[in-house]
Image (cartoon, rainbow, N blue to C red; front, side, top):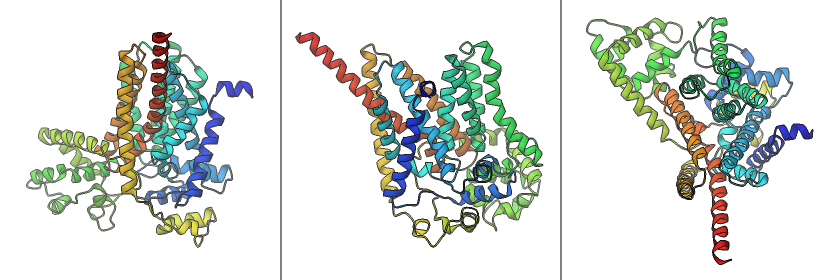
Length: 466
């Protein structure tokens, strides 16, 4: 047991912190423990049907199914608890690694306490407890960072552990696959001489395996050997949102009268209004099963048109940066009983009684006020962190590790914003799931550097007046 604790520091402590935060969120908050969106219903239903959908991966539904049917746990608690535990564990290791590299003294209890406070004030509990794969976005970054660090330091067991976690996180959402492709390319370009030759094959396989799993599951289900069968649907809907589709139709409807031409003057402002309404344009032109050739022809026409391609690139950059500005929680949250699919699955599979107050009440949280507070705290922490890093650098202290981590984080967040904002939907939830964990880390760094500054001032005073 002692060997296990020494090999995996913070693992048991992070389990305790995770449980305490979840208990506090349920007992002292105004909401039920589990948070739902309309997409939660699709994931829950598919955990029963186990079909490979065309618009998302099957693996989050498999995660729910595995815990319920294989492990025999008739509760949603482990669905949210286990990934949250791994996130807290990852945060603990990342925080201590950075502080030790920066030669800042580390107190394990203080680190865990500050991380818990940071998680709470970041609003992350609204993300953690969602029956959605959003928690795996932060876990993807933390596992990728720890996997990379472990590989570089030749720690095989830790590299294998975090590589597996990274792979699991990748397959939970299609956007994660696009992110990992970007990270894989960056690692090839910048880590050529830093990876031990013996680990290169394993290292590359960890990146490639998630894509093979998703593409293989689609192939077996008859969706073709692709990351997403319905990707053309979402891309065309996105181009309806950013105006590219209207320009394409204006140019081509004079010579080629496609079924989309009749809607060129009534395209919706948002991609989801193109796709999801039962009487929306997507359903009118053929729906999910009869539009593949139409949409592929439209996409090909846009890509081959130099002017439209240039406008598409500009629109993608704008959408990415717009996504990056959205920080907050609460969008898309519904009552569990407001969605018929969620209500039926919870009632039939988990035996939740909907007449109970716990599942029927809707939170009275003022999300506008909460999000203003979250943004204010995050901006304040960023400013303080930059000030301390610059100050320590001037004093000759090692701050390069913070700069390296910051660059890795920025690359990850930009890739994630591009894969969601430029290719799918611009939503606060989709950006917040990738940036929230910066707040607890910054809180640890700021407090740690503050004590480091006080220590250096004390040493200076002792030398001066001794």
